[in-house]
Structure formats: structure tokens, C-alpha cells
Image (spheres, rainbow, N blue to C red):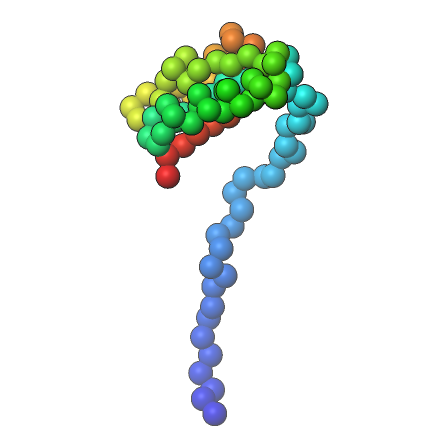
Length: 103
């Protein structure tokens, strides 16, 4: 029997961010303002109109803020767009975001 021993490392790194509680869920989407956020990479221009149509049918008093208001969340301006996100959401009275990204 071979008596050599070898060191082994756990393949997962140390946790560097503490887990925080999730934001509370909305009780309804009716009467809420929902924003679309997109990275301009994969079919958001096709998918968001479908989502808006279907959600509007289910929640007639729902309002929407288009992805054009925010700009692309991927690219040269993404840092500024994300830094400004909470202010832009407040200006448009956004209750929730649907974020689409390319894959």
C-alpha cells in the first residue's frame, strides 16, 4: 500500500459577500409600474412587447417604462446606467423591474 499523502483543496472559494434578505414581493401587479431593463443583446425588442401585452391583459391598470429610458445595461455606459438606476426608477415611480439579458 502506498503511504504517500496529498493535500486537497475545496474547489469552492471563500464567501466574500454576506447574504441579505430579499426585498418583499409585491402583493399585486395591478396599479404598479414595471420597468423593462435590457442589455440590447438578445431579442428584448421582440420579447418586451409580448410581455407588456400579456401582462396588460392580466393587470389592466399596470403601467410600463420601456428599456429605452434606461439605456443598455451592457457596454460603455453600463456603469453609469447602473449607478443611476435607483434614481431613474424613482423618477419614473417604478415598483418592479423585468430585466432581460442576452445568452
